[in-house]
Image 1 (cartoon, helix red, strand yellow):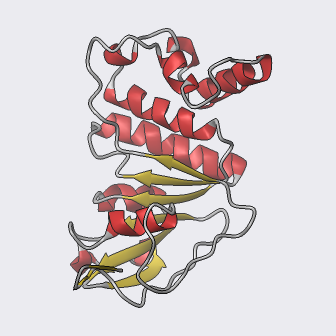
Image 2 (tube, rainbow, N blue to C red):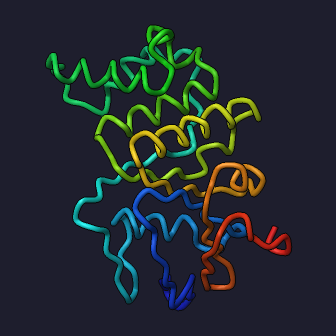
Length: 206
């Protein structure tokens, strides 16, 4: 991938197995966000190509953005933004299912503006799950959370992986968290990428 004459990365080659959990690691400015944007078809690579299996349904969970304390929508209504305006019985049932899946159903009437960071982030995850993905990209999704909220979110991701076989690509700078929950890593640096088992990730990279 190049921007003008600057090469962001070149000759990247990697595979993600169905049902795997992989951390995308690397220093700031190495192109992790660019790579994610390419995988989501938001950027076209300068050359080369990538292919998802035809069965892949991709979901995306961003780092939660600061939501104003006066934001009026409830958690339930916020999650429902990712569905049709007119909610059918089937849609309402799907929203309820994902609120339960993300442990938000009991607080579904809480306004998003009053929700904790971890609750907001789980609401973003519930939004993504409404599309019934079998692969999720978590883009710095734990970056602004306290340690307890990070673990709550990642335990949930682990559950989704184990119960529903959802493939996970987790963009993060938090190597200890990646070690705890991810099986594999992609390390992006110096325009190249390295792939391996998270348990064997070199300390020198950190």
